[in-house]
Every structure is written in structure tokens, then in C-alpha cells.
Amino acid sequence: MKAKTFTIEELARQGRARLKAKADPVKAAGARKYFKEAAEFYGVAAPDVRAIASDLYATIRNEWSVDDAIRYCDLMFREPELEAKALGALVLTRYKKVLPRSVFGRTKAWLAADLLDNWASVDTFCPEALGAVLVRYPDLVERIRGWARHPNRWVRRASIVSFLKLARNEAYSDTIYEVIRSHFGTGDDLIQKAAGWLLREVGKRDMKRLEGFLLEHGPSIPRTTLRYAIERFEPKTRARLLRETRG
Image (cartoon, rainbow, N blue to C red):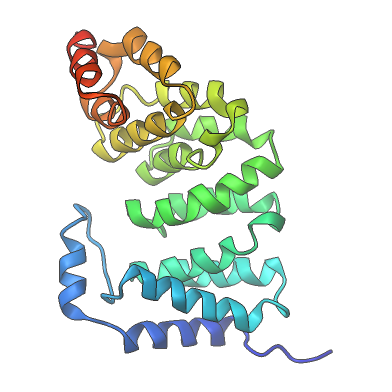
């Protein structure tokens, strides 16, 4: 058997080295301003992170199995810097069409262990990778709805943002509205914003249904969620919805 060009550990070292080579303390300090929780950065711009991930994937695409990629992702998620976590997510996402069912449970474990302990890491990984797993294994859609009651905020956010890509498909609309409704009681602004974001996305296909949903549940909807949800409406409609959904 031909030896692999890079082992999992070697590719991880190479990724960290390339991130360090582009590290910018000023950018790192600027990035921290967007996070209320503690977050560590190299200070590498997102396009550069994506370019590094693309290069790394190109070196192993014909050699690694999806299991190799999962182990690499696990290794990178354990790094403190967000750019390192992003490399793991971006490389594994390249395998999204063949991701096994086990990624569902693995992702929940990563989230619950706070290996993806910020909104950016959750949003980089879950819409693409976990969303693809939900498409491949439809029975998991019902299981992820239960994540809304999990004590970990990152598990709860994942239960929302994993549907962002699926919001384009009408078949998921009922589930999406049910998922969002299950989060209405939260006081967590990161959950409120994610719920509003998903409402805005599902509403792109049917603005009338979104409007009806907002009017029906108005007083129960956190105002942050509502403001995100109505961004695509005309100004007059936004003003009316803000007025008519007050308790």
C-alpha cells in the first residue's frame, strides 16, 4: 500500500504552521471585538483560511478516507484558535456527500464539550456538514429538534443553523418553523439571532407564510428574533409587523 503524503498529525502541523505564518496580532485583536465569549485568534483573514483549507484538501483528496477527515477535524477542533477550528471544518465539509451517520453524534459531542465554543465555529461547520448529514439520514431531523432543550448553548444554536441550507427546500419548512418555535422562550441573544436568521431564510420562499407565522406568535417571539426575521420585508411592512406583534 502506498504511504499517504501526509498523516493526520502532519497535516494538522502544516495547517497550524501556515496559519502562524499569516498571523496578524492587530487583526486578531479586532476579531475578538465580535465575540462576547473568550475567543482566540491567529488573526488570519477568512479568504486566506479558506485558501489554506483548499490547499490542504488538495494534498489528501485522493488518499484520505472520510474517516481520516473526521479524525483530522477532531484534532483541529481541539485547537484554541478559531482559524484552526475552521480548517478542520472546511476540510471535512469537502466530504459532505459521503459523511456517515456517526457525524451526527460526533458533532453533538464536539459541541457539548465546547470544542466549537463560539458562534463563528458553529456557523462554519453545522450548516454545511451537519445539514448534509440531515439530508442523507432524514430520521435525524426529528432527533436534532430535541437539541433545543440541551443545556449547552452551542448545541442549541446548532439545532437552528443546521437548517440554513435546508431552508431552500420546501419539504423542511414545517420542521423549521417548529424548531424555531421551540426556542421562543430563550433569553440567549445568540439563540435569538440564529432563530431570526433562519426565519429570514425560510421566508425567502414564502413571505406570506413568514408574515402569518410572525403575526400568529408575535408576543411570544423575542424582539431580537423578530427584527432579524423581518429584514427582507418592505419598510412599511416591517413597521407594521413590529407594531402588531407586540404583547
